[in-house]
Length: 480
Image 1 (cartoon, helix red, strand yellow):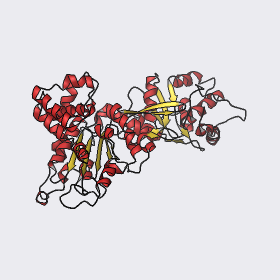
Image 2 (cartoon, rainbow, N blue to C red):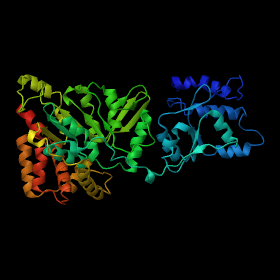
Image 3 (cartoon, one colour):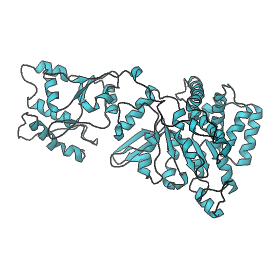
């Protein structure tokens, strides 16, 4: 079941062997790609096919070197695309290939030299980089050595601090920055709504600057996604991703898919931020596809002959105007929209999707007196965020989760116990605001994060009260 690129490899491999100065007979050659019932895609099989053909024609092995060549072939994998002149070209997805090869017990892998830096991240498997087919043949014959590389994660420079933006640029908006800090501390989803020019996008773009550094496991998983998507420009992803797709993005662009089922924006934002600017301008069907990934932290793409699962453990940050003209409820400019226009505009964001957004904040225009005051820098905010995240890691050490946003219902009962005053307050808010059971859980999770920022072991009434305030978009919709 080969795709078009593999069918075309017949000509590429034959031309590469001839142009490398090696012999290939004109007889019919049969190459079996096993298992026969599994779909094969891409040009990654060019090099192993070429090596197999050359071995069968005794271009690599002879009576003198047979034992040495067999020893070099032992526990060795080959991967790479061949050009017509025998050059080995860069391929996508080499990192997950190396990880799977290691799992299968393979000890060495020969691949394009351009992929060597990325492949060297994987421990426990020796990677060799070759520029062309001749280098691989001579290596197997013992005539030369291929370049190898070993990356020490501890020596990799962490680029988390190297951002062009900083929260110090944000003047005023203390309540919004507080909400952003809580969201970053617990991994909560965040919605900012307000008039044009009040700072929604400015704040959203600075949220990555206060997120904790990526761990090695998080970095490795994110790098695999970018490798498969063909978007990896360096050996490893060291900073948390920030993806901001345009509101005209299709469903396939958002969740993944296409002819080869590539990862979408929600997977490219894994362990980072997915920012949706002008949320109400997105196609409603596209937004609705986010509901399952927001809960399950992964997306399953089904095709007729395969089913792929991509991780999508992202923090959703969205911003929207309150109405089509943008000035409903503004104190600086009068709204010109009719009530029906406002309802129609806000109805594009469904209730089930809003339920999954933990924190919702109204962003007001900044008072001119506060424009001259310097804001708190990202480094100071990140220190508090890191401290809160450390508390969560220690608390959930045996739970296989890393943040409050990932708490299940059973874990909520265990880690978010309330006193009587807090229960009464939450019950009152639940009845008056008509909240759903999911929102009830979200409020508990946010309150748990607020308590962690204060290094409090227990959730107090004031923590619940602040968490309830972050449902203001729900309240405004009810008034409409």
